[in-house]
Image 1 (spheres, rainbow, N blue to C red):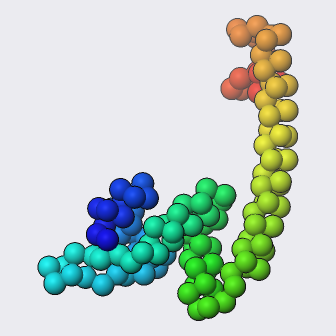
Image 2 (cartoon, rainbow, N blue to C red):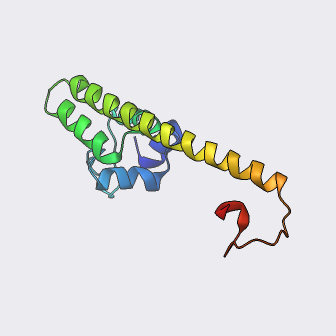
Amino acid sequence: MRIGELAAQTGVSPKTIRYYEDIGLLPAPPRTPSGYREYGGDAPARLGFVRTAQAVGLTLGEIREVLAFRDCGEAPCPHVRQLIEQHAAELTERIAALTAVRAELELLAQRARTTSATAATNAVFCHIIEG
């Protein structure tokens, strides 16, 4: 299957397919005598895996590692489990930090509603933030 067909079947642009090939996520396919890439039957599934793994937060480098396990005949699932646990822990930390920022913003919004926008204060920049 040529790159246009693969793109149409997977919803991944030809440019992105070529990029994935360049960075090792998709093996370089053989070429026809006229130079067209001729992708094998597993290319759509591989692209689907890449897109799904990206959607859950894996980086392209991490996805390349997972695919390398599979390409060497090893089970990638233990490595994937580790990556997922790591990403989940990082996400929990980010959510906690964002929750703290949101609470601070809500306090500032309350202050903004209860003070005059032109109130004379000793604030250097803005009394809403500086208190």
